[in-house]
Length: 146
Image (cartoon, rainbow, N blue to C red; front, side, top):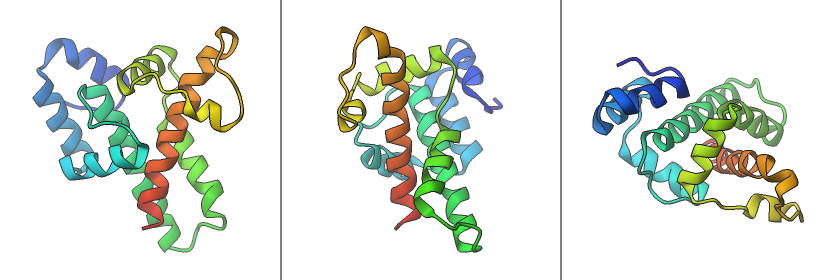
């Protein structure tokens, strides 16, 4: 099974079993359960249950590895701006995927609270994406700055 985006994961959940999807993610990103565990800890979330969570964490790990490689090669001027940029590329933009991930990770809203904002119906769509961005930044930061 070829895994390249969230659509493949969502379609695969209907066609393949969970273990095959997770194994395909592990193979695609050259990671293992220890990497997923470390990423989960860095994001402050529990170990994933669903393939879509594994895929998100794997993309964050991959982005972190790319950034670390660029940093080691001297292409990074401001590490914190780069962490934000690479996290932005790891977070999905499809509303359905953002919501699924947010629900799977437990509906947390502490990223919004960190900005001094209160989640409301007016900004609810942004709450999920901001939270995922915070997870991605935590994962990438933990790998790049180790």
